[in-house]
Image (cartoon, each protein chain N blue to C red):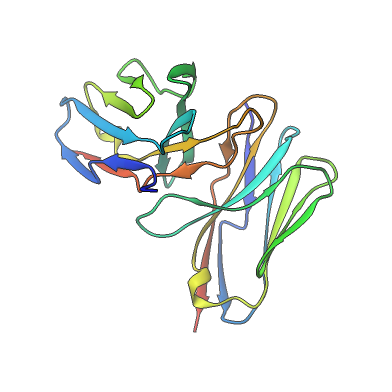
Length: 110
Length: 116
């Protein structure tokens, strides 16, 4: 079945640094999504991407839909303490299934 | 809007007992998804419904798991009998397609299940 490989699994960065994470798929996706999960809560949608090559921003967050349609990237600029959490990539192909990666845990050092 | 409401927030039970998790999706949403989250496997899609009809249950681990959606405002996920390996956080999510796409999932706060 479809699999999403997300990397890195965890990150420890200093406040103010930029963050990059990515996601690769074993198959082509029509839609790429990035979610954030905070402790004790469900994931919340950050950015949705619909076309190969698309670059979309949401405040300090920027995500890109890879040209091959098998990968996506998320960047966070000038990280702040509230950016802490687990970031998930997700994708869907032709059907309605939304498949999630295993997440990148972001830790911010003061 | 109250968002997706799940109950209970926490459930502790003994192996062999029946467990029922409940979900109220956002009013007007036509898709409902059940996911299971563990450290080892991440977020796994168990089953999803469209207009109260189960569309794909290929993610349901085994016959001990069953899900129903008797109406547009309520769904249950039942485990009978429960086993320790079922311990996980179970999330319900809903979305509205408007006839287009359904990727904007709204998640509930989850049910933390512990089977002893």
